[in-house]
Length: 94
Image (cartoon, rainbow, N blue to C red; front, side, top):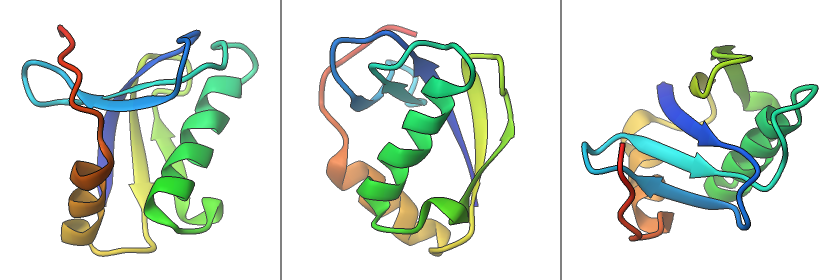
């Protein structure tokens, strides 16, 4: 499954949210330096989905806030269910 997420680095907490248009947004504590925020997103997704980090690959957006991840460990419907079950319900603007 390809999962698109907008990353907001340098946040106070790690949160998975949806914006007002229904797109996934992840706030992470790490700065966007030397791939640290990307690594933190992969760690957070791995923990959230209970899958190995090696099954989550950053496909595009290495230096851009909008990123696309390829997740191979679970079927798409299971990934989406787990993300919905674990997201925070804070409303954020696009």
